[in-house]
Length: 559
Ligand code: ARG
Image 1 (cartoon, helix red, strand yellow):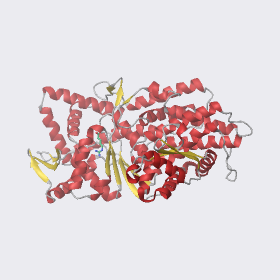
Image 2: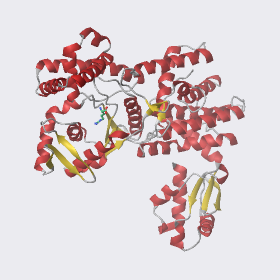
Image 3: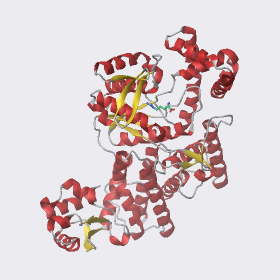
C-alpha cells in the first residue's frame, strides 16, 4: 500500500545501494504493538553491511529520513518505527475508498489466464465435505484472482469415468429400479454401489462382470453408454442444486470422460519422448524420489493420472493458462507431484505455472465426516438446515424484517462458507452449525451483521458522499479501523500469492471488531461530526461488502 511504498522510497534515499528496493519493501513490518507506531523497519540485516550495531544504524537512519506522511520516526531496539500522521492518512484512505467504491483494492487487467480446477465431485456418489471445501476455497480464489486482474476459468473436473461405473451398471441391471433412481439419484445409486460390494464379497464373479461392463463402456457400447449418460445427468442435476444454493458458477463441466479420446496421443507422446517404461506389466513414468506415475494398467486401461495429463495439455492448448490451480484435498499431494513432474519431463515449460492447492478435512466431534456407509450426510440437507437455523435467529432478533427467507438464505450459506474460509486451508476444521451461525464471535453472520449495522447508520443519517467535501476525521478511536482499511488491498494480494482466502476472512473479522468498538465508544450520529463519521462508516461498509464478496458471501443490507 502507498504508505509502505512511501516509507520504502524514503529508506531508499538514505540507504542507497545497501539493499534492493524489493528487499526493503518486503522487510517493512507491522509493529507488534500499537504503541510502537504503524510501520517498522528492522535494521539487523544492515549490521553486516555497515559494520555497526543495528541500534546505531536505526538511529542514524531515523535522523536522516525525510517522510512527510509521518509525524514521528523513532529508532527503538534496532527498529525504525514510523508513526503516521493520522488525519492525513485517514482523510486519504476514506476518500479513496469512497471514490473507488467496490473497485477499491482491484488491480488492472493483467491479460493473464488462470484455470482453477475445483469442486470436481464423483458421479453416482454423494457430494462430500471435501468437495464442499474444494468448491468454497476454489471459488474464493477465483474471485480474488479476478480482483487481481486475472481472467479466470472455473473447471469442474467431474469424476465421471473409471471401473466403478462398470460395477454400477451391473448393479443397476441386477437390482435397479428406474423410478427410485429418478426420485433420489445419489442415494439410490450409492445404495446400488454398496450392495454390489457386499454381494461381490461372497460372489467374486461379480467383479469380472463389472470389469466387462466397464470395457463395454470404454468401447462405446450404445446401451451401456446410455445408462452411463443417464447416471451422469441425474447426479449432475443433484450437484447443481448445491451449486445454486452456494451461488457458484462454472465455465466447464468437462469431467474425466471428456478425455477418453485424448489420452492415446498423450501415451504416444510419452513413448516418443522415451519416458514410458514397463513395470509389472503396467506402463509407467519414473518420478525421482517418488513412486512412478501409472499411465496404463496391464489390461490396457487408463487411469486417473492419464486423464489428468490429457486434461492439463488440453487446458493449456485451449486456454493458454499462465497459472493453473488444482484445489484438491491433501491426500492427493502425491498424485499432483507425479503429474507436474511428468509434464516437466515432457518438456512443458508452462508446467511451472501449475500448483496443487491442498486443504485439510472437515471433522465432526474430532472425526472425519463420512458421506459413506449407511448414514450418508447429504450436503444439501446440511445447507437447508443452516438456512433454517439462520431463519430462527432472524425471527428472534428482527421479526419484522422483509424478505426474511432470502436473507436467511444469504446468512445460512454465508455462515457455512465463512466457517470454512476463516481458518488456513490446511487446518482441519470442526463442523458445528450452531457455532458457525452465531451472530457474535468469529462468524460470517457477525461480519454480515456489522455490515448491516453500517448500512442502517448510513440510512438513519441520510448519508451521501460528496467528492468535493473531503471527510476530515479526527477520532483517535477510528485509527485501528483506518489502518485495517488501508491495508486491505495488500491483504488481497497476499491472499492470492499464498492461495489463502483466510487472510481476507481474518481481516474482515478485525475490521468488524474494531468498528463495533468504535460504535460503542463514539456517538456516530452526532450532529457536528455526522459527515466525517458517516464517511468512515460508509468506507467500512464498502470494504466489508467487497471482502465478503471475495469469499463468495453476500452482504444483506438488513438482517
Ligand atoms: N474427483 C476427484 C475426487 O473426488 C477430484 C478431482 C480433482 N481434479 C483433478 N483434476 N484431479 O477425489
